[in-house]
Image 1 (cartoon, rainbow, N blue to C red):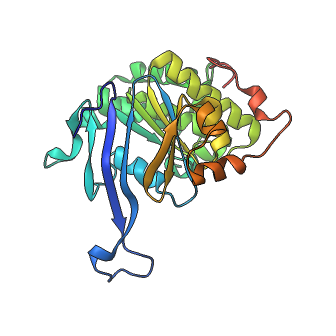
Image 2: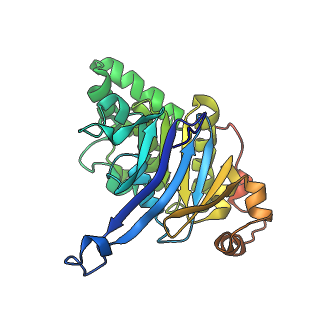
Amino acid sequence: MAERRGEILVGEGLVKKYPPRGGAFVRRGEWVPAVDGATLGLRPGELAGLVGPSGAGKSTLVRLLAWLERPDAGVVRLDGAEVWAASRPCDPATRRSVQVVFQDSASSLDPRQAVEAIVSEPLRVHFRLGPEQRRERVRELLGAVGLEGVGQGFLGRRPRQLSGGERQRVAIARALACEPRVLLLDEPVAALDAPVRGQVLNLLRALRDDLGVALLLVSHDLRTVARVADRILVMVDGRIVEEGLPERILHCPGQATTRELVGAMPVFSGDEGNQLAPKSVSSA
């Protein structure tokens, strides 16, 4: 396959099939593809947006890119090296290079753990830091996601004691604790109200600008993605059917599904978009 220059994480020709609902005994050759030959790459320091209707295969693609599931066909490469080439998927250092933040932070965070334990766990596993070093690093990470200056009371809270925006930022802080080079965000703002949504989107732009992390923001909402993305990819029926700059996608869409997504964008006068400010961690 041709080399994709300048891209840190690449998925080429990815395919993932599942048995149809109620069809556990259907022959494997008749399984339904959730991802059907998708190809994409992410460059360091860019915020790419992946949009598409429900059922397009976006979440499955994220799981393939993060090595949470093995593709039925195609390859995933990190720095040009094929991740699934070895008998074991990847070593811990490689695995922590790509982190995922899911939509439902309430279920992705251990309800039995306090904030400090949640964020410090990757530090203990991957970096073998002592207790005081971990605590200091936890405070740094929470500051990076707009939770600077929190006291021991906040560090001791359980996920159920946090707001939706706080939980999502704690989830992002936990992912950043791994010092990832790629951050995959699967509908991270879908469950948040408008003001908090704008704050989290600000945070993502700040992470791109300040840390140089490559981010993939997944959403069914083209309007949300267009505000912050450097590049937009459109996924339909398991394939990437279109990609381009946000201005081109919004004003000159080339695919029927993209035109439908543009047409479905609500029009507001003074919405959460007014709260978006580039390079503004403090506003997050």
